[in-house]
Image (tube, rainbow, N blue to C red):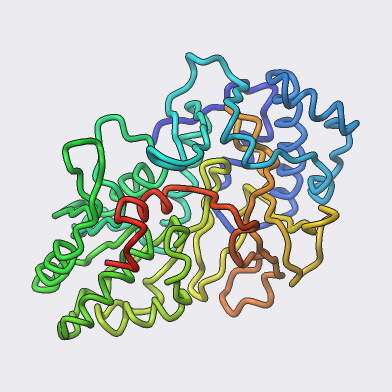
Length: 390
């Protein structure tokens, strides 16, 4: 990847330095200092370049000088993630936008998010480093791909579709199959039997299989294979399952992720340590990827806080509340401090049996009773809400 530069090298010097650290989970005194300095710089950046953010900081009597260390980042006023569903906010000129992504399809609320070159490429580089950290980069070893995501339309802007296709670069594509197929009329349909046929076909080769996308559709595939009494497939042990997007459209059928992983190993032969989930959102581009113990550890480029659902004050370890993300890496949109609609809790890294020492968070679900639509909801809707499942 060519050299990546922040929009203003003088104003965002620490942001640049922080995002050049290629050890994703190595929190050091230097990275802590750069994070705090980077947050000070990015808050100043958005105050200068975005009227809404400037008004928000003024209304909360917050200034960048109040950030003395990384702990002070918990006090930065946040923007509700839902705000981006109804407002288009930019901290850059429109001609610097290189990608416009949305979090849902043709129905429901859309989070409009705009990436400039720095924000997009810095995020992609983080994924490069995390995949490299876990040893998932195999440039000389082709793989067959089963993507539980949308077959690309010429103008498709869904974040999940973009991400899943981007992930195909870490191992050369021998063959690729989309589970959510184009119909030719701008919609998609879930090709359940096509997925089963491809898994059987892939099992007859020695090539690894990489399965990316929505967990619900993988679950439905395994359920139908069990109903059809299809014998266990022995996919290559170098295969990789990397899920994301959630179960939002099928929350009533969701099973525990460890049960899903057990089923994958039982029916497809892929070992547990090659089964991972990812968490992220179009409003916050930092990648959170499960460790070998299936926890979402926080990389050096972000911080995670949990806030009380009533008082919005930061909560201690183990307490459940709203999930808040803080990062200095996004220059295109004032999303340096975002409060999500997800309920979660956080824990010290020492409580996870994996070797990583950074804190991790556990997502418990979505707050509220109204439907908050996303890519996964759109995927569910296309199957027909009157059905209980495929």
